[in-house]
Length: 120
Length: 498
Image: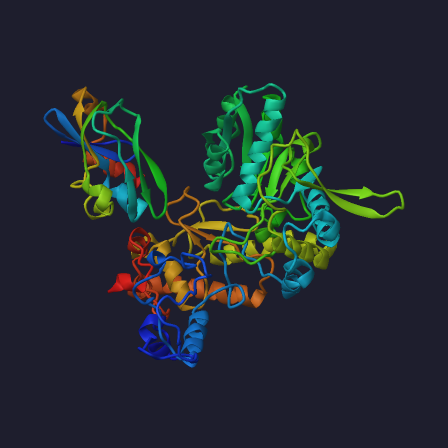
């Protein structure tokens, strides 16, 4: 199950875990990604809180966590090659968190709703 | 020019043993640095390199052709139209170069004592007075080396002002979302916290969004006027009143002063502190990081916080004017080791005096006329998100017809094929496909008309043969460099290539 926020992050749920990254729409708008500033394993975030930043040739944007939880893994491949986000934004998630409240996903947009949101 | 032969890297032209000239054979043996009769040689053997230096080996004529070819690949205002927005790439009249290059200024050392550099100090002081008049400020310092350095200095003045009153809780700076990126950066470097204020759909600051942000923790409101969309902020008097009522100061980012020249003064709009980018508004050639100059002006009552040293004029008992360097304890300290970039100051004063007040008063209106002319001629093909009279620059949101897949980046690259420098792209961030054009007052109608025709051609190509635009540029010496990879993994030496 994948859900999107209005600030263009997604969370893909797998059991008690959530993989958070930026949407395909966001990576297209950002252009070539040159740096992803990631939190540390063990950091905890509330929904709506900033957990890092993504920098492209055009702009630097804060990463806002769509859900609350504790970081259990970061995508270290992005340190070496941040452009992986441009190749496949969904496969190349940024952080894996342990969801503290999976019901928060219900308040986010599904794919259809998000597509409509981007077209507005 | 023969790019095949001479467009290569100088290392590729290199052939072993080739020389521009030959020196007599070296008859010294061993360590070529003689010892001075002391125990150790002048340079210890451990510090002498063991392998020969990897230098290109070329004949003189090949080197001359190599560098001349390279210089022909260059593009600047002297070679063609340079409509880069937010940068004011105006032409720098050659007389300014003569003034800046005159031995009286170019050959003087920054540490020359004041008594021996009275002429240069007079130039500094005269420009300081001229900028005060132009900006509507009481005093100026010319010491900051660039626009962002000026912003930092101005914010430090504001901090020093609040601190001097014991009002030490003011640590926030309000910056519009349309601001230049240097504004929040300067605030952060000055130890202040940035608070963003939103723009309204018409591109100007939302006063209703601003009002609740103003309280006793706000040190300053930073504004650019006209803003980065090239739009005049009409609510400045209201914003200044609200800020002052809350005890905050108003900071004017002078990056877009050009259209205001001689027409409106930041001091009269209620700004307390401002900087001017001399290299934008007063004609010094710039780009690629310099040289710049970011003088800072303050209204009456803030002069004592300007950085040391100051240049002041004194009248001696015999009536003679002298210029001295002064320093005060109330100043925020020093922000530069010297009196700033003197050559840029010399060009700026040359520009101001050669135009005179009458000429300066035409600069703003003509820059505004040129920008509006280009905008009106192109808005049938290009999307103008905020359709109103602009100042010196304006922003399209890419092509009107988005179905072709042609982006702002493609348009910018296609312009290179036609001998035009690209406009500013993807800034400001308020639109997805920002294409920001600033023609400046110095361009002729013929140049503007040709640029407009080329922009229409590109829009037509995008409709009829989009591939020609998508695959541009076609005629440049280098066509499709991977600039992101180059920035991430720069190859800076020839050895890295092999």
